[in-house]
Every structure is written in C-alpha cells, then in structure tokens.
Length: 434
View 1 (cartoon, helix red, strand yellow):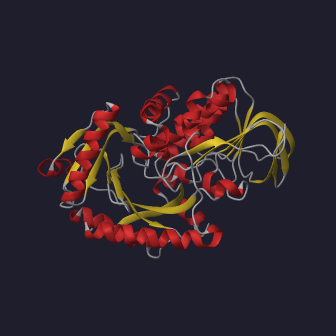
View 2 (cartoon, one colour):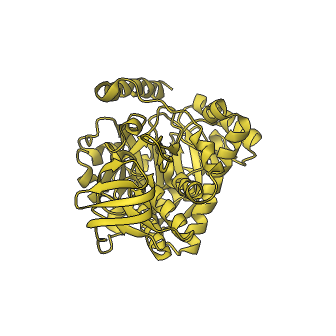
View 3 (cartoon, helix red, strand yellow):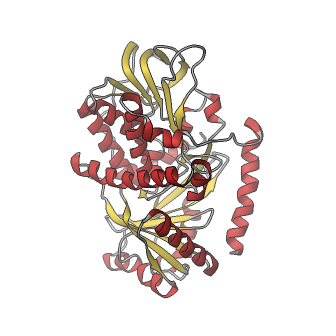
C-alpha cells in the first residue's frame, strides 16, 4: 500500500515502543496443528488462547508484530461494534444480538485481564466519551444511549451541553455520553506484550514471512517465499494485509486509511485543563475525529480518511488544523509525529467471522477474522478467544457472529473504491451541514 512503510515508521507509538530483536522467518518445510496468518491483535489473541490449550501454534507475519492497524490505531477500546446494534438485531434476532453485545463488553474485561495477568505495560486508562458536534446529533446521541441502557442494560452517563464543556474544554461539542468501562492504551506496546505472552505459552511467531498461496486440504498448505507450512487448521487474521489469498474474502472488506498526529508535550496544567478525566474521546460524525491525552501529556489526535490507499499530502498540517478546530488553545503547539494505517471495513460495518467452505471433499478447517471496521482494539481479543474455542472445543459463541451475512462491495475490483469515495463525500457533506 502506498506510503505504508513511512506511515508505520513515523508514528509516536513506534518512537516510544521500539522493536525487540527480529523473530526468525519460516525457512523450509514445517508442520503444526494450527497456523495463523497475521501477527496483529486478532492473530496473537488466538495464538495465546490456542497455545494455552496445549495446541502447537505457528504465526506467520508478513512484516513484524504490530506492523499493521494493531500497532498504529487510535488506542481507544470501546464497547459494542462499528455498526449500529440494529444491524445485528435485524440479522440475528434480539437475543443473539444481545449475546453479541455482551461479548463486546466481555472483550473489555478480557483486555484488562490480559494486561494484568501478563504484566503488559501499555498505559491503560479508564474512560471514553462519545461527543456530538451539533445539537441535533446530541439529541440523537442521547436517544442512542437510552436505547443501549434499556435494551442491553449497559449504564452510560449523559453529558448535556452545559456539562460536556467541563469534561472537554472545547467549544465544538454540544453533548456527550461517558462510559467508564471503556478506555484507552498504547496499542503497539499492548500488541508487543500479547506476542510475548503467546510465545511464553508456546506459540512460535515467524516474522518477515508473507504467505503467498494457500491450498485447501487436510492438512492445509501455506506457501511462503522461503518455505511451506502444513497445518491441521488455519486462521486467516491478516485482514487488508493478506489480500490476494482468498479473493472472495477480499471483496467483502475495503482498506480505508485513517490518520493520527501527536503534538509536542504540553504543560501538565494545560493537558489537565483540556480533558480533566483523561478519558478517550470520539465524535459521532461519519468522518469522525478522535483524540486523547498520552501519559506524557501530548495530545494524540486522529481524523480524516483515505480510500485511495495514498497518504494525504501535508498530513501533519491537515491533522493540526483538525486538532485546533477542537482545541483553539493548541494553535501554537507543533505536531511532532504524524502517521496512519489501514483498517478493514465491511459494507454494514459488522464484524465478519467464519469458516471457508472447503474445495471439494473435506472439513471446513480454515477460519477467518476480518471486518473490525475500525472498532477492533478490544473486539480482536474476544474474537481470538472465540475462534480458539471453535477450533478446539465449542463453536457456539463463534457462530453467533458467523451467522451474519456479508455482501461484497459493489463495483467489482476497479469501481468499488470510486463508488465508496462518492458515497463518503455525501456523508461528509451531511456532517458539515449538521
């Protein structure tokens, strides 16, 4: 993807979580019980769970652990999904949709438990605020909070127009909803810590090992540039970074670039005045902004998207303008890091988990996790746990999600991206018009 190496290199996360010694690639022929394609959060979560169950696991990562969205995202771990709960209710029914919601909340508990039990130093902080940029969006946000509480028994605190300014010192927001159970962390440190935990449990992680071909069968065969791995079961968890292995899956996700910047250090007093609770914040616009304070008192600010996979020009300045729009008091504060990454979105923004139908006779022994749609920091963890359950003992919880129907993006390989650009331009105009 265009400019992706530079986007990874220039992040504040990379500057504050340097890589350990490279892990050996896969050379020659090898076998295992479970092969996992992708060394991000979903693949590492599954590797940890499977290794703890005593299975022989190998992870094949094309670059290095945390190279993709897992190590470059906004760091916000939030309840629920990128789609409205109504999407799941319409397809699954009320009770299965409620079970899916409860699993998304369990994902937050699992995240905290892993940080604690594996002693991962990833700067976790409790608290997340959803904010509205217009009065009408504030009314819609309060109605959403009412529905979440009444349908899913999930408590949320309302922040009206007069209250929200005490939580976020910005003239831009007209209301908000605070969730004490969600929070934020340093995603690259967390990903690296999860990799170390998986290795301690017995998993092998091969870096610089891109899978170039997959052959169904018993065992499944995965070919790399320098070797071949045969496995009884396979998990595909590379998302947009594993495109080309299974074209049918590729058609159901779209790579979307998202971008972040990190300011110079602020004075402790200024930082404390901006977000006194130090919660993570995200607005409800379609093309949204999201931001939080780092442990060393920087403003980490994300916003804007790209559907061409090309990095926007003057990225740092673009993001600085977005930051100052929310916080005019930061107009003289420089940006020290600007970066981005690619997330995989589905048509309906619901997660896409399942099994591939085998070619010819044989078992469905290839699983996949994709379509986190920018909402995956916590959800990838529970997804890895569910797929490990399905591979080793019980698929009932995994199948809550595998029953969701997903469509390919319209327009085929060449036209679907321009169609999405036009569609998002319409939504962006709606955001501007309120």
